[in-house]
Length: 250
Length: 316
Image 1 (cartoon, one colour):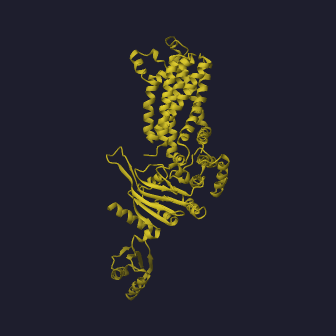
Image 2 (tube, chains in turn brown, red; image 1 turned 180 degrees about the vertical axis):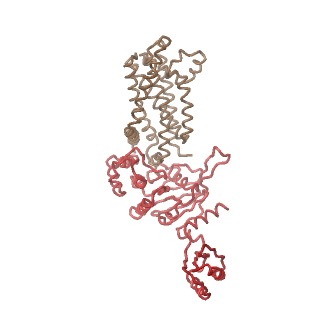
Image 3 (cartoon, chains in turn cyan, blue; image 1 turned 45 degrees about the horizontal axis):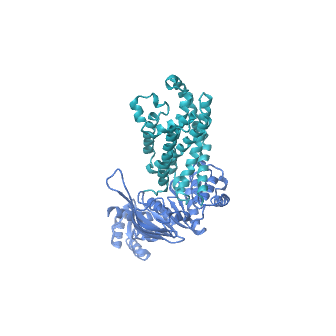
């Protein structure tokens, strides 16, 4: 049995579900637009302190935010499938457990890519200054991060099996990422103690790396650090997610 | 087809200090071509037993051979050889009937062409061909159940597990589904293990019943044998009027040695004698010049047998 074929089936199923729910599709696509439209002007008031066009800072930050927080939330879809018996039906087939995970994840990466492209295009339209190649590198880094956090979200959902518990945990992870990683506002403007706390979080280094890539500085240590953290998280997340899918219910 | 030996499943319970034993030392066999019912009240361990045998849940201890494959070491082969319909359903609400049949065919390793051909055949057999392009969310409960069963058959398994297949269905859909379950065995030659807590369903469909309560197997046999385990028949005689009741009670007590129960004008008593002894009882009623409206000798129902078996288990 082909792992690729099972992966393709799972990818197609996810894509089809989204295309049938046009309202969700519209809301999903509108989200980055709303962030740029409603938060960009606020950030614009601090151009001098930030030392850059607000959209040059905001777009990479929003991409990472979407890759981390948005991706973890995919676990809710899996929990819905679990409750509806759909997941059991799939797990009783001989299809590869990896295919069940990666097929879903690949769709999520496509979804994130479409939203991300809209975000980047709008960013450029609103005055973002970014290097072409650097933008591509930063974007690819974000897509890898998306895959990692989707795998982690699915793994957590498989482990917890409960929407409420899953929701609490995802919020517990999201809040520090949102507040301490410099996603919306760079941590360079934060007080020293907050910067020290922030530097502990891998996502801080990833946000910094993606921002550096967007400026075209793709050989910098910031980009390398962001890449290494992303690759490390990806390996850990897929190992965990893969095991969670393969494991029989305990 | 199934050989389960000393299956046991213990769940760790985070909110209680002691673990929960869902299935406790269950052993049974299912032969090819049988429809076997796993019968028990809610929480008896039916679904856990099914989930262990379908590789969804790992047994804490015990072994099982399913379709000739070892459950612990050949789980993937087991999955390729069985069909499974969970009590919550199988089909995704976002897909159409045709998409579900083709997708599951492909997840079972069929090529797109073969999956489509097999899906069309099953759609026709389960009266889903007119619904091929309908999105699942728009189907009725009965239609969805037929789709669930069709999906479980895309890879032509020889053994099918149906976990409470008629829960939530109206009587018409339920009767229709019973026909399809019988056809699985009679026409396609499949072996079926189905769980249910509907006793009429178990009685009507199953060649053999496994009664499970509190995680333990407490009876194994054909429905008629399970009913006989309940004990003798019940003789009910309806008196013509209230004035006949005291004498009727006396006659029945003397004739059967049992204490009758009275409900309205009905007097019921456990009666082990069969039709031969019944003639004697009726002769004594006649000799006492008692007027009666009707006489009924009824074997125990599966409901009574089940309640008797499971209550023994609870009080033991």
